[in-house]
Length: 488
Image 1 (tube, rainbow, N blue to C red):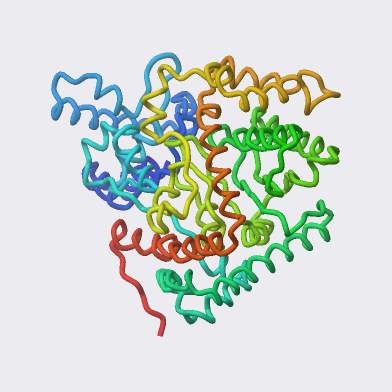
Image 2 (cartoon, rainbow, N blue to C red):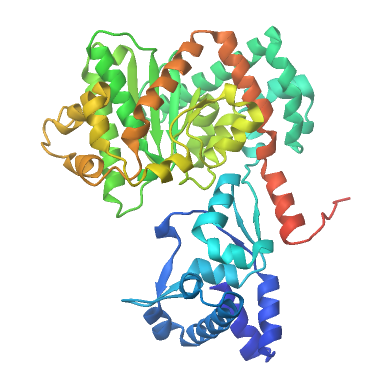
């Protein structure tokens, strides 16, 4: 909306000619895209504009007329391209394509992780990127180390400062100096003590705030993010159900506390049902005298930054398990990494760059790549996995035969429809076996405290790129062309 509004001000109030007003508008604005999800690439009905903002839709139509004129001049006999780049989606109810408007009306468009920016440029708005290649760039997200390490995790921050000084607080790239300390037994011991302290502090805080009692001696295994099908909390649930099934069959598993946290959109029924399943699973396991000694599931309500500042430093494992090609960047992944949690995740969002910085051998990556997801879309069959993967079938049967909803028969039938009848769009079953294999490797490493701590240290050492200081400096330098203003 900034595009037509600034154009309106310059034309109607400043009385500038069109070419000058359009040039100023475009040079003034820049667009950062934060998601590739169709529902977030908003399309607003033309009728809304005609009713509430008639002057703005007049200007949008004029911008679109000039745009399509330019497209047809540059690409003759390519009417399909003109239809795709048009600011107006025709057919049925006419709508304004807001992302197209933002791209056309600004001088810069960027995504927020390397893979996201590449998919944006080559798939989502491919035609516009071909028209304006010089406008497209990447600016990988970052987080502030002052809040997410110095303030949130004073024990670990103290260990780091004692070892390399406090320069990392304002220059996070200095964390790379921790890399050789991964082989120092004294530093590993100090690092482990800091993690143990953070886990004990979180357990004490959770109990004091009315939450459940959790054991710091278990692996703290976390998935913290908005509840959404593509982020695949349901895949995590299936993993826990498989582990629960193994315990019921007499196997022993590494003692773990699984934490889930995040909010769901008010009308997002699928997300609410997944939250219900998590809580029912937690209750069922808690009532099982054998399983509850090895597995505990906790859904943390009222998720907020205050909770995250306590949970993230205490976490051993970070689950970043979105369907490859759907996560724009993520920032919780960076927070966990910076606090020494090991990532169990797909090659998606900024997790790809994180693994590049720390070394893939220090991550537990699994699952289909974005290209494999796209290439298998036409023939993927969740029923094949149900029929050929005994553990997947066992987990699904427990859910769909009401093992976790005995007093609410049929409660989770919509999940069956999503997974088995509607094609499992986000490919939970395709990645489950690979997820469990990576989980097994992770638990195997946990039995080696020095090996685990070494990888955790290398993760912290590799997290320096993911400071918001770096991100903001790149926006300032590359997009806004502004220089720092030193404070005397």
